[in-house]
Length: 230
Image (cartoon, rainbow, N blue to C red; front, side, top):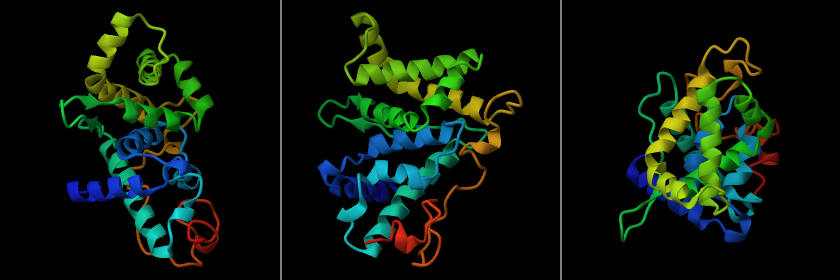
């Protein structure tokens, strides 16, 4: 588990990536991790890492920078994975907070979750069509919150205000409901439980990577030909 100081370091690392690279902030990354973990189909790091650190890791100037960045990123991914390993009861999103008012800013987290959903849209549509009312409603509610976060909701203004106020408490329940569906024994479902990112062990163990070793991002290429290019 990353300590508060290490989370601050991860936050600073993500903030250091150029804005034009279209990387993520910490709360967005936390929501992104949750979306990846509760998705019924595993998405390998080689596919989702570019979403986190931007269009290319060229702003990471050395091999050591790449290793440090990947270590922090994958450790937090592992922390979220462990928090959602059955029986998952204590999951807590990492929201931003307005330091002046103390208001919980959940919108960035929700945008990160939706960004993970975009990697496997057909998979999420099958959850909605699965016949499981709670899981389907949870996916639809998450999308409704995303639309509110993006200012695109067509709900009545009163409903938007209510959901905006309740979102910080509602979101963990939505994540856990989807997580329960993903990790249940769904013998008739289109995705077997073993195909999801819901292993009982951490999905990734950080360590120093040899240049000729397989890249830990899961691309199948050698590290020197992939994330270690720099």
